[in-house]
Image (cartoon, rainbow, N blue to C red):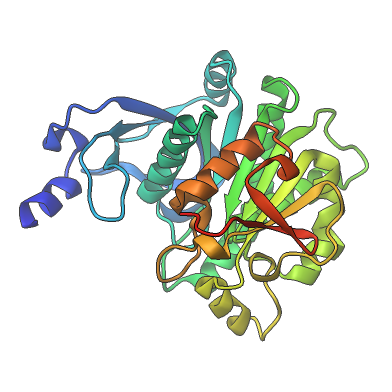
Length: 322
């Protein structure tokens, strides 16, 4: 085990696992640092960096992981180069926006793993990571500030992307605090006097760490205008959001409660029956059943045609799911 951990801390090729290279394209407002291991840190940059990071996929496995995924050093490209390559792939684009307590390496791993799992579920996508400068476990308040500071940067990333890709082929999946970045940016873009002339495809807010009333009163209308459909993955058993609610004075979090009487273009899917791990905070990408449902969302399959049960305006997974 000690040898394995040492190998994982070094270059990807040190394991010699004969895996394929998975490209993840990115834009980030993290600060670039040079040195023995150049890369992006948790500090906030005033401008975006664009590029590609190759992630090594291997059949090698660790407990609780589907595969070992090791990101190489990111390659910084110009925005035009990234947009041209992404558009030439001729696949739906999935913008991945991570949550709190996520460093650059884990953000790249999560984006690659999600793309792998969706491909296995019949919904291949081009993964494009937007990584904002999350600082880590003990920096929750700092991360909140970093998330809101990233809204304008996310807008400046999303506008040229939706212009480069056919209408409806840019989907967004955001997790936890990353949902604030997405919801606020979409509100600024589609809630203004000159909204973009192209619509997004599917927007997914998973375990959203957003005040429920703020979402309904401020963000909901803009999301419905911007996207073909919006999906919330929620769980009343989510311990991380329970802690966030307590930290915010008891005000409810969207990813815990969902919405009562959601409008027709908003689907609320309860993942409680599938929850994984102690925090129960990332079920949408940890459960095979939830991942198949996400693939259905991205494929445009109506919620009533997926393996779900209607439950008082929301939807739940069938008993016995994994």
